[in-house]
Length: 331
Image (cartoon, rainbow, N blue to C red; front, side, top):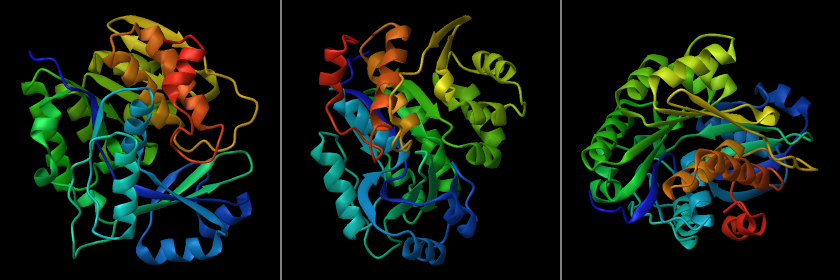
């Protein structure tokens, strides 16, 4: 098998994040469950935006954030996603390319607008996402770059994108291409509500070809319909070779062929915004794994990256993770 030119390529929603602050009362007013992600239509997102006050716009999307993190560590990364030929599409394309990520997806004219997510951050740093999916979930087989996938050591799939049949078919085609090329496939479950919608299909995907599974406690217990984390973790370890499960302040565990590696969370003094914590955790792990580091080192890089991103507003690193990781002697 030829050596891959890319470390990680992600497939996911290409979204521009619009981040603002609010209190718990505003979440109750708009009917949003604190800490969750919900899908809203164009009318709802306009209403929420009008009431949320000053905001900051920056490119986002779960897998795109992860890929940005891989690039910040110094990894060679690619991204596949769908944007419209509009202002937000140009913002997203510019931002991801400017950090060194290969993004060759052509903008689509005369269709739905580029996706956006209104992220409301409460004083405790918790984020609540209200997402208008727009064009990103229209991704289909025509956007799948088989050459890029075959030339990437790891293909990373975003569970949020699993809502439409064309996107599901594209996922499965991409997975098959990666396997034919002898590459690894990673999947993030993305959100508990996402798992509730697609439980059976996620399980089938995991059991049929996922090498690395990422999930937080809520997602993995939802997947296996149990309230017991240990039970869910044990079942995940049977369904995939490598399960990486996060538990917020309790840290994370890495399950690999009968062994369990526990990783402590990195403590920080001030949690500003938890947006992107799971995305950057995956970035640190995938970067470390693609470089052949031991699983414990991968986990420490993951926790370090998650801690960096929750120390400021926004879901992407504000400093070069490679330099910070070297300073802390993590790599």
